[in-house]
Each structure stands twice: as C-alpha cells, then as structure tokens.
Image (cartoon, rainbow, N blue to C red; front, side, top):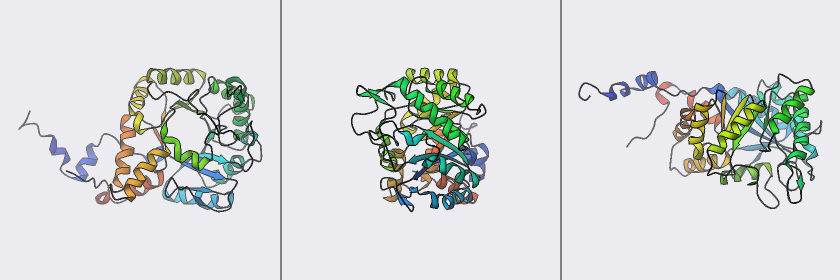
Length: 331
C-alpha cells in the first residue's frame, strides 16, 4: 500500500511504459479491406470514408505495392461487378472482378483473404437467393459453395464468408475439400451483427438492399449468448478463424469469445467506426493517436487479428521513432 506501493514508478518514461505494456499491436496482425470495382477506370475516393479508395484492376497493382511498402501484409478483398442479377452469378464467374484481382494482390506479396457474400453481386442487394420475399437459406448455400470454389481456384489464401446463413461454413468446407482445396482455411464471420455502422461500406460496395433489411439473417445487437452459439456452431462446422463484427460497440462480445473459444479471433473495425474516428480527427477533435488507442482497445479485449481501414495509418504510427509514438493527450 501507499507509500510503499507506487504504481507510477513504471509509468515514469516512454521507455519504461513500453517495457511493461501489456497489450502490443503487431503489424502482422492487421488486415486492410480493399475494394476493387469493375465500373471505374481509376482510383475513386469513397465519399463517406475519407482517404479510402476503390480501385480498378490497372491501379490495383500500384496500390498493392504501396500497402506492402507501408508494412501491410494482409488484405480482405471485396469486389464490385459491372453487371448484377438476382442470383449474383458474377460472384463465382471465373473471369469476375475478384477472381482477376486475387493474383495481382498475391504477386505483390500480400496474403489475400476473399470476402464471400452476394450482396455486392445481386441486383436486390441481399446476401442470397430471394424466395417469397426473403433470403432462402439452403438455396443460397449452393451458391456460396460455388463462390468459394471459384475464389480458391483464383488463388485466394483464405475464404471469409460473411452472409450469416445457417450452415454456411459446413457447406463451404465440403465444397473446398471436394475441389481439392483441403488446405484453404475459412475465416468465419461468426458473430456479425445487424448494425447501423455499415452505412459507408454499403456506399463503397454499392450493396444497399433495394428493399427491406438484413435483420432476418444478421444478429440482433442486443444478444450476446446467441453470439457464442453462432461461434460454437461455426467451429463445429470447420471454421479455422472466428470473427466478431463490428468492433467498438461489441468489445464485450470480443472479450467473451476470446475467453470461451480456443480459436484465432478476428475482429472487424467497420466502416462506420472508421468514419466517426476519421472525421473527428479531421475536425481537430482528436489527433491521430486516437487510432492507436482504438486499436489497442480491440487487442486488449482479446482480438488476435484486427481488420481495419486504419491499417496503413497504424503501420505509420507504429513505425515512428520511440519518442514520437503514443503522444496521448493527458488531463
């Protein structure tokens, strides 16, 4: 007890604070979401996500090399096709936009995780096949199996199904195994909540539902026990990595998942989180060190992997000399 116990002793300098710091952010644990868009012919800014762009195939090569040079090693790839239909057939076409983008990113030395969903590819904007006004779960699984196999053939390092269909992990695992991709891992969007924080992403991916919403398949934000059931089922079905999405409002779910399950845990810091923090920085409310505090909170809660639009900025912040890092404003 005071005065013999003085906890401030190990806070006396930045060197000392770093020596005893409990939570470390490792750059290899960051994943940058990347948008490749077949409808554009040059990098195009995403208005609701400042400093984030969609790329055409020609500009993607340069951007991929820029990521590598900045220290980003992993990407989560989303595609926007030039043609959409009610069954999202461009999601699994062998010459589709994601299938063309995968080798470009891999040739730059990036690990490529491919998002598997249909919302960017359907003309109705939902994540599966519509029957009687709702997404038909089991028919949709057949399409997911096709998409997974197509992405794996194109060279995807990891498949990340995000549609929240019941049984999607088992269906995809069987499809990958049948196609000869037994060693291709699955990162399951296990606890993906129906959140208001996805708005900027839907602008970027052009995937806003034409009618209705996704609450019949994405999780209710009030539920935590259900999240554990979803994660447990995904593990039983063959998920190699589990995920909680979004991050900031769901750190209690991240903590519970990290202590309950012995699986690598990814956490997705979604577009709305990026928008709020980025705009606050631009308005001068915070300086950019808030990004490091944000990422630290996610890892402190138990994340092993952080998918974030701040991946490049984090690499820049963490790459600075010691005396420039973590200049947190104190009060």
